[in-house]
Amino acid sequence: MLQFSFWDILSNLLIATQWTIVLSLIAFFCGGIVGLVLLFMRTSRIAPLAWFTKIYIEFFQGTPLLMQLFLFFFGIALFGVEVSPWTAATLALTFWTSAFLTEIWRGCVESIPKGQWEASSSLALSYIEQMRYVILPQASRIAIAPTVGFSVQVIKGTALASIIGFVELTKAGTMLNNATFRPFLVYSLVALIYFCLCFPLSWWAKKIEGRLNVAR
Amino acid sequence: MSLVSIRDVRKSFGANEVLKGVSLDIAKGDVVAIIGRSGSGKSTLLRCINGLETYQSGSITADGIEVAGANTNLRELRRHVGMVFQQFNLFPHLTAAENVMLAPTVVNKVSKAEARATAAEVLAKVGLSEKMDAYPSELSGGQQQRVAIARSLAMRPKVLLCDEITSALDPELVNEVLRVVEQLAREGMTLILVTHEMRFARDVGTKLVFMHHGKVHEEGVPKEVFAAPRTPELQQFVGQVG
Image 1 (cartoon, one colour):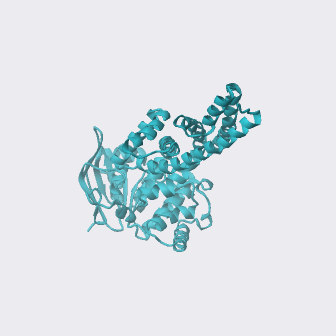
Image 2 (spheres, helix red, strand yellow):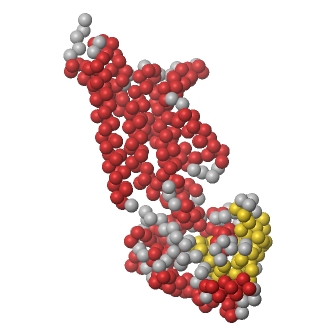
Image 3 (tube, chains in turn green, purple):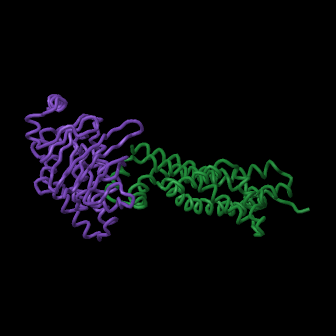
């Protein structure tokens, strides 16, 4: 039987960690782009757009991420399209992330005083122009800390992709455990690696938040 | 033809009717001072003129454009109707010059250089040439309000709406703003001011409008109206604030 040393386990986990990082980055950036589009729709005065976004957000916030992964993985296959775990995980995590980011950012947009909207309206700016030149430059400063904070949730969320067979950190841990029968060691290492990814982000988010509070 | 024409405008917030059939005609070059107690509907009326508030019935036309018309392009209307607010509402992330340049560059598609030249001109007019690159947080209230006036002027409005523009200022800063408005009036700018500055209304205004309970209760030439208010409500109001 093949023997795994501590270093074998660790190096295999670290290799799989790359995929956790890649999936997190893609989910975060694609989710961010979709989230920004949704933000414009959610805060617009066109009622059907705002309603669609509201329902979208309720769905992705109100159902478990795991169910969403299943729906993308098995659901799309029903239409005869073969979906790889990679595609399903990317899609589900992107939509899930976008729903939360839209809500976080909506709060930031709504914290901008009404007078900023009125003044820019009175200067004949359109809604898109108001957002682009007046509201978002101010809201984005407030948004940095909670957005960075949420990125931690995205990293941890990628662990669920292991269940549909995507080989990232958690899945690699499960496979190594099956081969070595040393669950405590393997999962301790897995948890430690997640912590090393997440802790700097949450520390940074707290730091930014503190700095913004001082500025007021 | 009047520049701004208001016909029997009615407006309610829920069950509370704040404008109960207001009619007013404002000609080019008029300086209209609207006075009245808080809650008399004067600010709401002003905000209806550039479409910041909607109204339920009646009509308002500004520069020939029906404000609440089904096909009205509010953007076109607002290019010609400027507004200055009680709370200044400067954009805090932009310098004074950038505040002034924003609408000309974004809405009128004027080049940066040309917009900067306009900004220099209008900021000079309000006496803030040396503050072009200051951020709003670095300016006093009076200076901020003068930047806000300059920001409106940069769009070359045909009429300027001023909503209690000195009410949020410390007393010693009120005059620097009023002097700027007086200068504009002398140059022939059409102004509609909601104000509590009675002396200013009397000395600079060409028309006085006293609003009471959502209606124009009394109107006329300011000096005459102040000298001999006809209604007991205005007599009482002038007695209290005068």
